Amino acid sequence: MDETKFWELIDTSREAAEGDPEEQADELTERLLGLDPDAVVDFARHFEARYNRAYTWDLWAAASVMLDGASDDAFDYFRCWLIGQGREVFEGALHDPDQLASLVGEFDEEADGDAEELGYAADEAYEQLTGAELPDLGLPPAPREPLGDYLDFDDDAALAERFPQLWERFRP
Image (cartoon, rainbow, N blue to C red):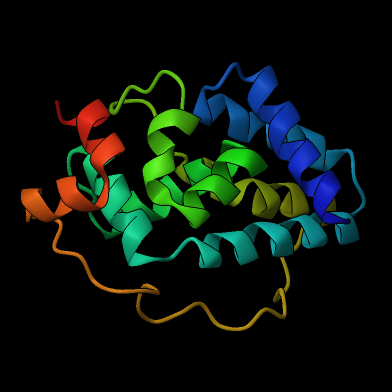
């Protein structure tokens, strides 16, 4: 599976779910069930590689601004949600997390920003197709610490300075 097909599956599942993260996970699983097991493994590789790329201090701080705080688990689920928003939002956020202020449409911190189940869609589809667990993806190990420079999530002044657009939109 190439990158274009990966993002197409993400986009069509999000559109069918009308942006609801839980429904998107169900929609994505259904689409993956229409593929052969090797393609599901390829999809999982694409997803996991992007999930690991998004493990940065800047994105964690941006998630903290958007969600009014982000624990380890909340940031894990936020990264799944970020991938689920599609290539433009994902790549834009990686390039400059402050762009999320303009890249993301309506946002409800109670419902959005958390797509834990999206991270399990490939596992679920593979298990349904084969009766076995998803094999090792052969990717380098995830970073032990977020990439980039640490930013204190409790320092409102630093967050407002680093993310002026996000701060204005999510913490007026």
